[in-house]
Length: 630
Image (tube, rainbow, N blue to C red; front, side, top):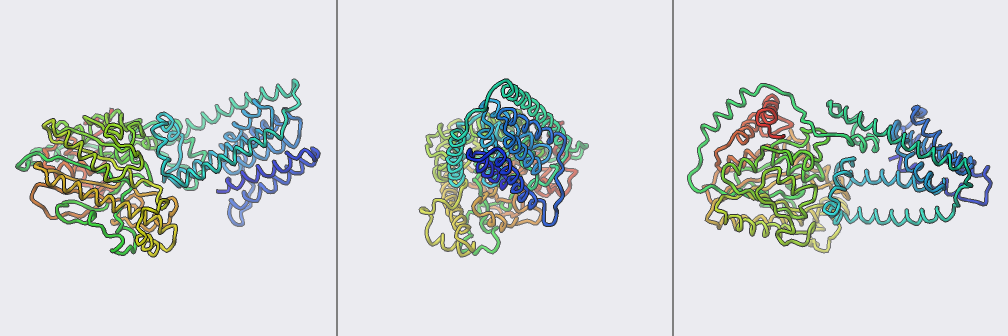
């Protein structure tokens, strides 16, 4: 994170020297040279021990350095200002060649042109640049994935609905408030301590040239982003490992990404033959068609997957494979630490969002509305009433529109079912609301497919310990080996207990009904544990084929029917639809049958498919035969 060290050095060094009006311009220039020396130290440290290679500054970077320095001098006629601007752009170019110099130059030149105050513009410009960097770091820490242009684009489209996600990120909110307060004080002081430039034709010309340079920088950034999108669309990977890639490059790389399916077209004759055979041989069980109730359990992992966790702390009956459970085991998901809407997309369409490339990370916006074949659509064609219950506002990540695209007959958000706690809605409240909706929807005289999304286990964990039993906290601290990690884990286990109680209540209510039911639940992703990342590294996958960070848990049980021996195996979330169809005893249509057949030949996993040719045939069939995505 060497660029975070650069920013305070720049601001402090320049503020200490160039804002001191008691010294001469020559002395200010000396301050700027001292600043260059200070700036070099974190940069050299970032290059690695013993590696003192000079930076490779491109012509584009050099042009940005010269233009910014010239504009600063033209406005104020102070060489110290020119030197400081040059050093700031040089530092940005060193930390992230080809791009950061342009990004840094934009706020500097815009503010310089509008205010005519080079020092104020420098402080504000650096603050804005560093705010962007901090936002990217925070997104990775608190959300589990990098911040992209598309995040900002889609977040702002429904800001009032999406902003609630920060309501329980207490540490993030505290950091943000502190940074904003400090920034406000710095900006006020910077404005007060600097008068406007000397004015005159040269100053006005410099300010006009600064705006022209801004236009050129925007054009260069736009060209770069389009070229990056072309590289991704052609299947190119990140230029560097995601953890090491410069942040602004990662952020802007997604600006022009569009969802494009990435699969290898193959012949589907063998797949279609098995689909036809499955449809011919599927026997429907006697009795009424069961309701299907599926619970997306927020951030839920089987606590037993934590390495070395004792049974008295991490054993929960909700995760046991005992009747009426018929299927359970590690679940292979495709997102970590966040992105619930991506798991929703995968289970509804039978296709991971990753198939659509980088733009697939926003599938609820750019893919879901065009879905034409899905689990809800297939169930509706088999006579089901398809209903979704959502714990927050329906505008969150475009949920209401996405669920319409998936094919649900009815979508209930928190306002529709009278919930007021939003992100603090407990699992007990969500399950109770879901059961009320189920009873209401049964009045249509059809079997019901009810999909329930919970939110209570959403991060941040380990903050409100007053509600967690002290003995649980002490046991968790003893296992985790530290106070912060133990508090985080204790809170997580306490919320898991709440989920287990809510699930037991739902199971009991469904069992007492006169109608059979299939009850399933799954974890959408792992918790980010932003305050205790070492705890995440202690999670095992439960199956050596699955990446540990992409592992949660699932369980399927049949109620009101004769029990069957439980089957414990790893499963990809993309293949959960076929399993639900099989356990409900529904005669599969072509979409359902394709999911079941692909799961069989892939041994239940998608990315780690045992026979990749069958996965390719499955995707080819969905995209080219079924036209599942318009």
